[in-house]
Length: 213
Image (cartoon, rainbow, N blue to C red; front, top):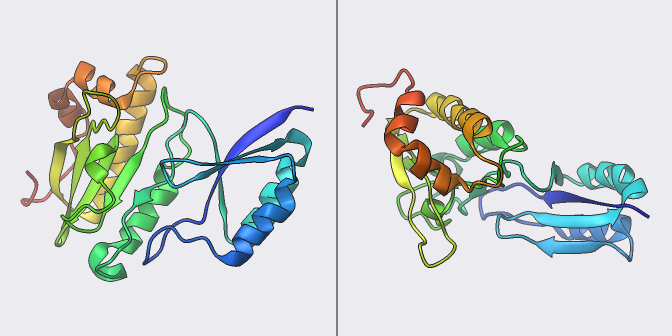
C-alpha cells in the first residue's frame, strides 16, 4: 500500500511549541500502528502512514487544534522562541500573522524561517534561512543562516527597523525570488551567496520608515 508523509505542529504560544495530552492521544489513535512519526529540527512532527487513511487522519488532528502542513520542499511553519517576555512584548500576534502567510510555499529546498521576540534570540534565529527579530518596537530581518557543516554561518542583516506590516511582504518577496531563481535543491544560504545580499536587499526594498537601516 502506498504511503504518504505530512507534517503536524501545535503551533506556538507563550511558553513555546506545546503539545497537549489530548493532541498526543488523538495522534496515536488516528495514524495507526504502522505509521512512523519523526521529530524534526523545525518543531514539526513528520507523520508517514497509509495513503488511503491520510485525509481522515488530518481532519481528526485538526479537530484537536493541530496544524497539518505538507512535508518536503516547502517553507516551514514559523520556528519561534518561547515568548518569555510575554505575548505583547515579544510580538506573539505578529508571529502568528507571519506563520499564517509564510508556511507551505513550494521552494527549491526546505526553507526554515525563525522568529525571536527579543535580542536574546533563544530560538537561535540567526541559524535559520530567514530570521525575524523583534527589537523593542521594530523588527529586523536576517537571511542566509547555515547551521550545518564545517562552514556553519550566522544569518546577515537584510533590513532593520521595520514596522510589523512590512514583514510579510518582504518575506513573501524573498520566497518568490527563491522560487523563481533558486536552483533545484540549492540551500537558501548558498542562494543568498550566489544572488548576493546587496541584490536581495534591493529586490526586497519596501516603503520603510525613518527607523530603517
